[in-house]
Image 1 (cartoon, rainbow, N blue to C red):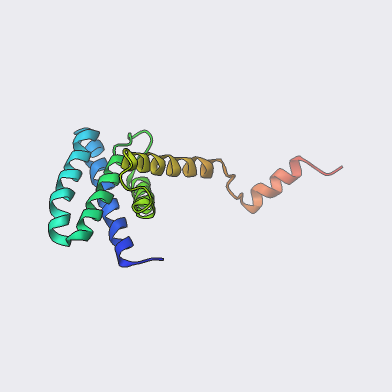
Image 2 (cartoon, one colour; image 1 turned 90 degrees about the vertical axis):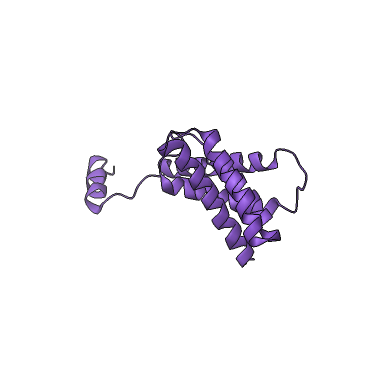
Length: 146
């Protein structure tokens, strides 16, 4: 079920992932600093502004900031990072009440989000692109029926 809380979590995740990746790649300050900036900002600001929901938003942004530590070779561009952040936010929202207190949960969610989007993109790259009518006709002529 879609709710305003889920939307807020997804937006916080996009903020966290994109900001961490931007600091790491575009500003060339490193993945750890990029994530640390997001974690510090979200940990101080979100709970102060949003109250109890702010804690969940800070955790979602933190999770996505871990995903934002992905290398530029694996995630080049804004759209893939937004997709990874949304997946991380969705996994966080699904699992926040299922695995409370499990160590490494946020990093694991971040890794799963990165691998999911990278895997999906590599599968799409292997799907043949629809050819034009002329290319189909030429291909058909090269291999006549017997």
